Length: 153
Image (cartoon, rainbow, N blue to C red; front, side, top):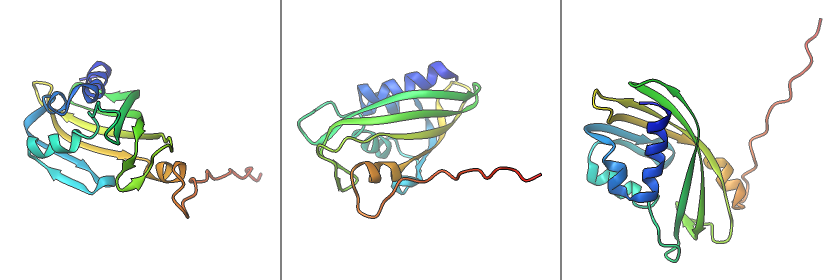
């Protein structure tokens, strides 16, 4: 697996939940701690998670979700995919009113692959704080970057 597979995986989100699930081995573990999803091992459950992100209906409020690869570090057995995500026509995300409030997030997903190139382990992390800030959730400020102090001689 490599950069090309990472692109294929992200493009599958434009097709369908089934297209995404086809890239996973029968024996896999999926986790997205940001959404409190741990130890998902059933493709039916996985498909129900991914159906949101594979939505194509711009009228149902779920949004059309666009993913773009930022980089891949790894080899044919494991790798870290860095990506960015922007939904369009989304009215509600994880219970938050996001109608007419564009947002953008960056994240990364770690994959382990079997001999056939199927995903056997996945763990995804993404910047939920930036989303909350972008859509105006009260009390959420962007994460400040520390300013480096000049070194003392």
